[in-house]
Each structure stands twice: as C-alpha cells, then as structure tokens.
Length: 209
Image 1 (cartoon, rainbow, N blue to C red):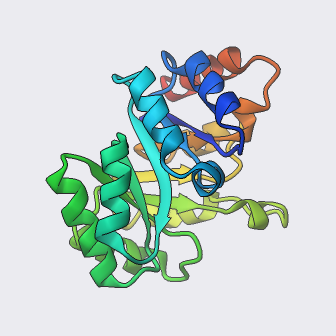
Image 2 (cartoon, one colour; image 1 turned 45 degrees about the horizontal axis):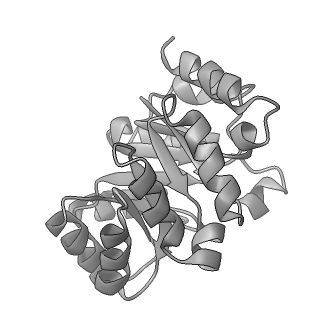
Image 3 (tube, one colour; image 1 turned 30 degrees about the horizontal axis):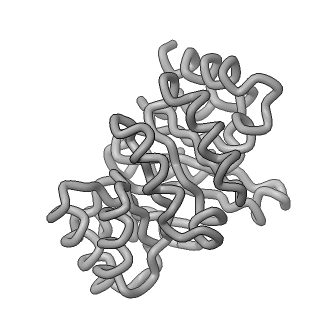
C-alpha cells in the first residue's frame, strides 16, 4: 500500500517546497490539476528535474487528444498520467499506448462515473494500470466521501489496482486501509497540516499497521 500526496495548489513555488518536505516519506507526489491548468507542465518538469528519483503523478484528467496530451506529460517527467474514465474508449486507448511506449503508467479516474465496476473493468481491459476512486472537492463540500465507492469496487476488481482520493484524513485513513487499496491519496490533510512531515509520517504509519 502506497501513500500519495495530492498537491492541489496554484502556487508552483509552494508546491515544490511541500514536495521537498515529504519526498522521503510519501511514495508518490501528485502535481494537481489546478497547478497544471495554471502552469502547464512546468511544475512536473521542475519537480522531476529537482528530484529525479521521485515518482511523480501528473493529474492531467485527459478527456480528448489522448496521445498528444499524454506525450507532453510523459516528456515532462510524469511517471503516472491520469485520464478520465468518462473519456471515449479511443482516447483511453491512445493514452495507454502513449504512456506505455514511454515506460509510464496510466490511472483512469472514475470521478463522475455512475456504474463504477463496469467502467473500471472496461478501463482495465483497455490497458490502464490503476483505477482512481475519487470524490471531488465539490462533492466533498456536500458531505461526500469515497469510502462507499471503494467498498463496492474492492469487491469487483483487484484492490491493489485502486487509488482512492477525496478528503482522506488522519481521522479517516484507517477505514480506507482496511480495504487494502494499492494507493491512498491525501491532499489538504497533509499540505494544510501544522507540520506536514509529522502528518505524512503518521499517515504512513497507518499504512503499515
């Protein structure tokens, strides 16, 4: 089980500073969609250049133009690229083909999907490496969490292929650990913590129980 930090900020300098603080604790550092929209692939390139050994996920949320967008992310140094599971099968296939040719991985994000199991199984058939169970920030504001979706999906596909995200905190992480997903993703619970290193170490400890 791996721990991923999702840095969903819009200030590149701050994002890189946070990544440096936890690079030896977390397994994956995610450059979030807000920063990618603002700065393009510059943060991915900067992070990988500064810490080449770090596993970097670019949360590109590709919906179309699979080959060109995936190529740009891989070229910038992303080890994992995300595609929306809602995208056309042709787009998902292009992302998979492009990423795998570069020796990189693809995560299909199920955000907004109704039939999670069917879509997840289709994405795996198309060659994606990881499935993202994701409750977006807007749904979180209405009380949504990904726990129910993870519980459902973990019974349908290999849970080690699942990455779960959406408001995971130190208070709730044990509920997710019990379901044994491959990756647990935490965002604001880490980067808004008074001490990000201690928060990351505490979460990492929960994964080892």
